[in-house]
Length: 257
Image (tube, rainbow, N blue to C red; front, side, top):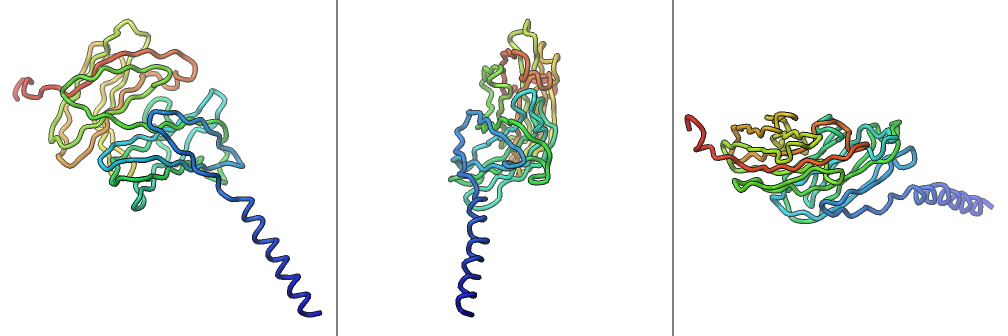
């Protein structure tokens, strides 16, 4: 009789501790392609999600999350990026660009598969819920050859990077001066952990006349150059159409060079 009770007790333990664990198994990670926008939902039953993507050493990638739809209350998210050889970046919520509720930017250290973890602020105990949009962008190297770009409802931010220069000039010109919107240009130094520090800005309406900023950089530092609309959250309700050129200016042509 004693053996029977023990066996039943073990059976009960198996039922209690094994089956509930299976019901909370994590969902399969979503594979991200560069330039594609993933639409997801965070709420009380799904307060976190995992993504993966392929990267190469030296590439500069930007992960941008934002509310998706005017009714979403997802105002902030936490981002964690792991690479083939360990943790690459952690980014808690911060206001950086109009319409963005968190932005992680980093130069990838290795070739291979990267895992991106997104959670609503506060995780399980948080209260935000609703739809979010997540975009993975591969920043383009900025050179002296001017790049033609456009901001639209599909592309509300464009990202470029500069590295290996002790001093450089970013030259911006908005080519459609009759457009309803102007653009901001924000230059930020990457801190190597997913975060960044803004160092220079060409603001809004200034850009209609064209503008430039000079940055005293460093040969080992990486700088992110972001072009974005100057009106917060207008991508949710308005049509955005801004055309521009962007490139590195000729420092030797400046007075006193």
